[in-house]
Length: 231
Image (cartoon, rainbow, N blue to C red):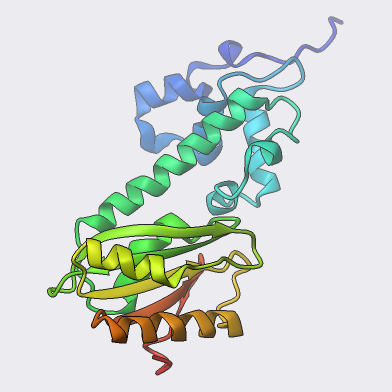
């Protein structure tokens, strides 16, 4: 009996090859594993790109949001993934985030905390680190600009209140909304969250640029200081 040899994707039946399957059956026919296999491009002598992709997805419990949190070093822990393949996966995840955010931009009038959460969750909801963002609003409660004020570890970020208000004046904003994410998924406002909110509110009052809300955003929900009566 001949020794067992693992088949390359090119040796598979036509309908089982991800690229050919996309061409002949359409993008909707591919599973998440098959789409990632296309990004990976090739496997190794030990396993195909599809098998490698399946192993990666199993590690993140078949959750694309969890895959989106992985960085280059995380992905390189999988045998068969080097810098190039890891970067391809990360770039695809980032394009997905930007596409979601582009959809949110089409309706950028803010009528409540839910609009803010929907606007920013594609950008910060599944990040592995904390980011603090400002939304600069006009008199029609439309977002005229947005800016990431700081990036930090899971423990928190540092905000320069004077810089924020300077930016608001330069952008002719008439009100402000702030938001940051909690990578831990915890929606409870910390004392540091409450302190910076008070500082931003007081500074806004002095310059007649009111703070409308401050949100804590996670992948699965959000906490609004305004909704909770904390502004």
